Length: 471
Image 1: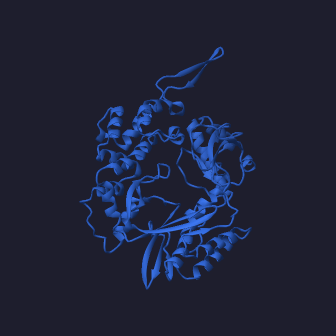
Image 2: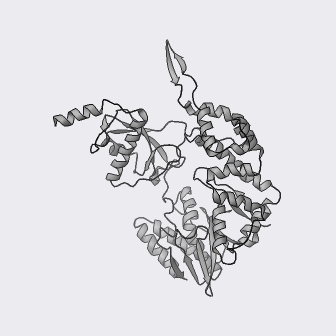
Image 3: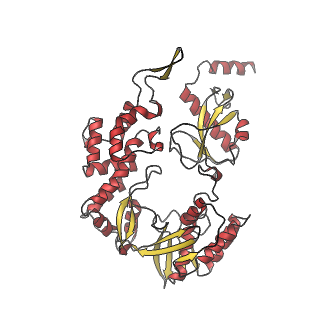
């Protein structure tokens, strides 16, 4: 025992740096959470944090770990969906007692926690977690259903998934209402939050659309592909032994489709697998999107089409437009946001250092000042971009917000995109479940025009496009 105590004293002679203490605290929290049977959610978006679900604020749970839970009050937005908290050590904590050289997490060390429990959404609770109503979650994927069989299977799976309350009953009634050849179905008052309707449209919408297609388009069967196998196709309608692919989009206009998914769909189809689109203007865009990461493609698309935006950015960075790379942006944003000398403020008779030379500026004010005119002219950033620790986001996000609009304005680009997209024999169904009505609309890709869109930086979204019906 004496030797052990002496060892701890020796280990603590070299105190941890603040960053080392935070890293050790993160590991301690994650290990404690997993040992308690709680699943971690992996996420690096918004800056360093731990993410896992706990009903309520978790104060009693963390108290047993020697941690205090406080509200998150910084300007930087880690997530706009869930609530963020600060976990602070209320005492010195041995990070890993079983390690060869156990380290002590100093009292006062803090780390951010995002509570991903569904009731902890930033705008208030909602009933359904992401994909909770998808065909995969309802155990429908990889199966073929004849008329009547699908509604029966859905009813059974909903009872299993929601054994308490009226949730299963109401969703089953909704599925029965989808068995119609009408494009608009009035709904009785449903006891769901507005956010729940959005989830029903986006996730349960695939099931509702399959039911509607069987009735309204007279398909004898539907097949839900395995979730991991099809990125663009949500289900197949089967008629006289032939499979017709359907893509489901939520809302009145539907969501965005990625360029990668449309290219994959073209390559998977025998008739178009060897199609040569090299003569198409949009194919130059497709090649960049296929070959590079989201961040790289936003830079390269601007370079490819020599936009004014990239030229002005190059002027700020004091380099040529084609010399801009992701690494260079990373280095430049860090350099521009680094405090060059200590900054002091006078409070009463004392001077207090508010920024230390070599640190990143508070709330990224140095980088924001440097990019101010460029941001204002091209794409003013949201708070979650302004105050992020992911400094390149302040450049990549505006580049992405502008490039798809620039592409759509180029002569011949939308027509070229449309010609490529129309090679896919696909039917898109738009389903929209609102408080008073449920609507359906179906259109062939071949009957539509297309234009580029982008779903934004947060999810690592690559360039995509949306379907626009011809008037």
